[in-house]
Every structure is written in C-alpha cells, then in structure tokens.
Length: 151
Image (tube, rainbow, N blue to C red; front, side, top):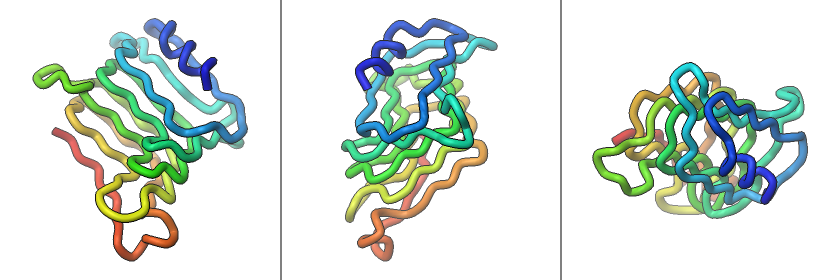
C-alpha cells in the first residue's frame, strides 16, 4: 500500500498507476491528486480480468481535493464506513472535479447506520460508468442501503 500511496503523491497529469491483482488492505487515502484536462491520473487494475481487491479499512478508498482522476476496474469490499468516498477535502467552494469511476465493484460495506458503497460530497463534473454497488454487510443488508450523493 505504501508504494501505491507514493505513486499517487508523485503522479502528474497523464500518469497511469496500474495495480496488480491481489488483496490489499483498505483505507487508501489520497489528497491533492491532480491530473489535467485530457490527461487524467488513472488508477486501474493492471489486468481488468483479475482486479485488485481493497478489503477493510474505514473507507476502502478515499480521494479528497482531486482533479481529473479516474478509478477503473477495482474492487472494494468490507470497509467499515464508506466503500469509495470522493470529497472536496473540506474546501467549501472548491469541489473536486472531473472524476470518473468506471467498472468498480463495491460490496459488503458498513454494518448498520449510514455507510455508503459510494459517497460523493463536494464533487462536480463526475461520471459513474459500469459500476456495481451493493447494500451493506451481509448481516445487515435488511437495514442498510447505499446512496450516491453530490453536493
């Protein structure tokens, strides 16, 4: 996970960060990742047929204060809070933007209460394509749900 965090910290416009198949500890957090128009930073499965799995963590993957970023062909499971969380990093009036979420599978998130498979807060100009989002953890499916929100 440290290698992935380092790659995100050093990534510039047009960078492609390919994640090998396997299971990784959830809780990936990155802030201030900035691609450019026509040159997004892409975080994707090295082999889409064998996507990496981010398992556990409070949020499986959280991106804050980002621009021109794409997540592609990843699996997020069993996070205790939100599965994938994209937000403005608390910078009101400066939303994250140009975010693409493509072919993500997010499942078994949270336990009870308000945990979301996908949470977008303080994000504009985003696309969600081909994603599969399921309700809460198996034991709590009857009482929880997922929601996608944009502010």
